[in-house]
Amino acid sequence: MRCLFTALTVAILESEVYGLTCPSRRELNRRTTARLKSTDVPTSGTIEEWQESLAASSVPLEPTALSEGARVLRSHGVARFNGIVDPATCTALRNDVLQFLTTSKTAKTNTEADFNSDVSSPFVGEKDLAYVPGTRVRFKEAIDVGFAPSRHDLLLPLEHPSVAKAMAEASRALKPVLEAAAAQLPRVHHPSEFASQLDSHSLDSQPLEVVELAALLSRPGARHQKLHGDYQRLVPEDVSTEASTRVGRGGLAEGAVKRPVEGPAEWELRKGKLPPRLVCFVCLQNVPTVQHGGTLFLPGTHTYAAHQLLYKGPALAANGGDSNTEATADVSAARTALLSCVRPNPSALSNAGEAPATGINFGGGPAVCAALQCGDCLIYDASVLHWGGANVMEDFQRAVLYFGVSLPGAAASLSLEEPIPDGCVHVPPVLL
Ligand SMILES: O=C(O)CCC(=O)C(=O)O
Image (cartoon, rainbow, N blue to C red; front, side):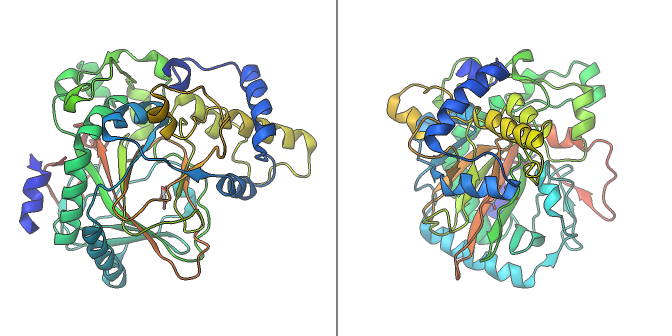
């Protein structure tokens, strides 16, 4: 197995909130209607209008102590950590990223629609023939995945010195949090693995795998992305059967977390896509306000219940039913119900020392914005609902380094039936 640090040296609540039980629809509507009146977030109108009002009322994501990270990620699905990477490291990488953009190859373009759901298979370039099955990891060459006007997803070469340095700094500080928080990721099983009762507990003692490493750029004029999760929650958390042995590693004892275990039907839905994962963002310059295009999150929506509301109902209707009163009411009710899954800004946890009540009864929000300083990081469970915010500044390019980590074997399992791309050689996973 290829260890990340080896590779780098080449170049250098809970029950209700966590979705264990879900309040009844009627109860959700009752609570949320009361709260929405006080926070005034309109729920009708087009999807763009709804997201614009959520962005306008958003509050900055508050920082969390590293020691609280796994707990906050479990309850909220997103946590911010200040001052993780040296700003000089970030500035050097940002300069290289902007340079890569002018010289890199461009992958087949993804459409905005692809980002409503899971990211699909990786593009494999000509020069970068080393290939870790089921991942988007690149070693030598950057690839630009320009997926919407004024937005870029630039796959970064792990072996480039400035990429390697930033990765090393971020992973050194955040590894214990990532390891402890991985207990909340669903385990995927290929039908054959499932039948042979794969020993998931032995996998839990193995290192996490890096499945993507890239930079996100939003240029002036980038519009809001559509609200989405990077992977979908496919089974309710309350059918969990597997208590993770990973919890407690890194000194972050948290009590037993039951990991959702998925079967062959879910494997079919996930195959060929990136596995369930935690994603780490490293902010490469200051992002002072929501107008600078920081990511917006709905904390607490990394649950089956929230995903049912988003993906199976009319919440995402492009036209909020303007011309039809009944449809307007349905859209509004679906959005209202979804917002009732949102948890207050994660900082409340560290301040109060205990989980606050579900809902949006706080002085802003319900959305939180990743208005980070250069070198700050955030980790999110990639299923938490979020979107890249509009960059309305005239002369500001927001750049973020990100990497995603998954449970050992998950990427390989989901790519079991994929042919090896022409001329490529399988290389072992990159370990965190
Ligand atoms: O650009 C961002 O801030 C978020 C991007 C994102 O969520 C995505 O591309 O899936």
